Length: 318
Ligand code: SF4
Image (cartoon, rainbow, N blue to C red; front, top):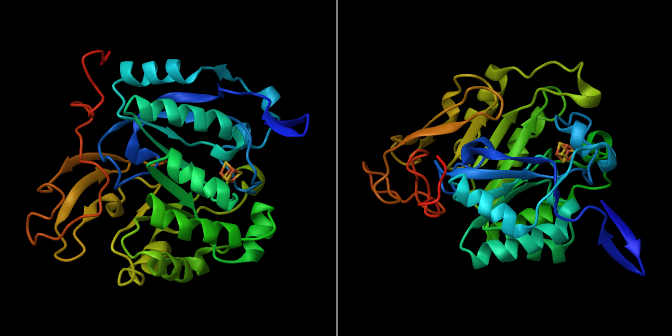
């Protein structure tokens, strides 16, 4: 995605996007940032990781030259976001740092026009980029793939986990942060307790999405993880973190937001399998539990999908 030109690193495919569509913000997943809202999902091609289980390898692990890319400048994307009734734009699918100058420029124009931006990221970047990420995105979900260097070396094909942990610590202080951990049974399920402890040591209110990974790409032959075994491991962590979610299977009851103090369901969601979570109803009073008054960590307010978000409006085509 980059080449060297007169001593500078430049993008080969600026403002080039492979994925582009409207989705529920919960499906990305973000459960504590503008819940219920419509997001314009954006992705490009390429990745700085080589996760052996990657489900997006068809765009992330191929030469970007072989992928369909649509060229859309920031103004055009923002118009499309407004026309589709989207409250925000979220970069997911592959890694944002591979399209970084384009995303920085998009973020700047989006800010001027009052549209929020978010992203999913593997968290493997320099401190300078961590700082720029916090400037560009008002909400970020970092994938914490395991808690040990061996896993990162063997299954992700990078040298160390340390940059990911460092960047999580920085972003927890500088933006709205959620964390996702894909679980592959037998390979990283043993890291569930240490991952929960690490997140809690940063901030016990960080929402943690545990994802039942169905391996693809080079690990197609691995078994799908046992739902019961992961549930058991997660129940043991509930005293560490306020919000633990578990999804990627139909009918998960772990996708609701529940008051950590009194147990009342505050945001009801449904998981239809895959990344298909969406919110159905919100029972919050402002940002507080109506039963016990506990404040919920939330960026923005819950928005009904049909009603649209703050930016949705008169020009919506829905
Ligand atoms: S970080 Fe995500 S997109 Fe990149 S290789 Fe890993 S799973 Fe695929």
